[in-house]
Length: 336
Image 1 (cartoon, one colour):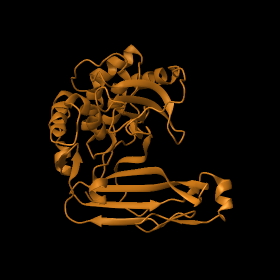
Image 2 (image 1 turned 45 degrees about the vertical axis):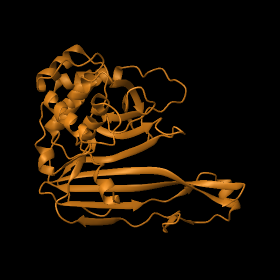
Image 3 (image 1 turned 30 degrees about the vertical axis):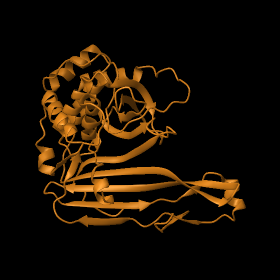
């Protein structure tokens, strides 16, 4: 699979929603009054393609939300914040372009001398735009690298550039220039392993039960997925929250559908890697396995802030995607 195809499999929506009246304000106040969960030993929950979460809120506000959204199977206890996010998502505006801006943070190395080496923190901005007629653009910019061990870097002569393996290229202490590329032809996106056009994504059902059935069809198309359909539902539905150009109505239905899944857990208030406040929702990626998916969302806007996966490899390293912006906009594509 090419780099462009890989990029096409990661995309998201979540615009700002307008004020929804006194019931919504009461719900927001209930959310902010909810005490943060007791801190455990350093544990960073995870995600792969995600759920969204918001936890218990006032009964009156919950009734308002049920009335304001399509009929759905009863939410599991503690999932009323997901219904709050659904209402926000459904009220979000649309625009001419779908825009997703993500920050990928990783590490590289070792560099320096044997026995006195150091690694770099590297980061890359990725942007994707889709027009409703199928046109697509991708953009990106490599950000400044920084040594994680400053003293070892100084002993190495304080270099400002480092080679990037056999593929060539350089990491630098200066950021690179932004790029913007128009992709040829009508692009297809992937929902699980199902290729879809923008119009097909637009036509997904806005009813949560019907949406779950369509998600199950997409999961069965993925021959590389070793889990069950039940395992695949949370990440597949969650991808509609931020990774695919779904309509506000479909995005709201995805939140509602997630609220009915037993594997989805609302874990309470937290902050993401950039210090932004949100609510954490987690789910296993395969039944009984150690890998977990984790979403952090902003309950005030229903926007996804980060998506993380933990416990999937031998070193159990976290893999975090930071969502800087996502949603429909009338601003045309440009190099960042």
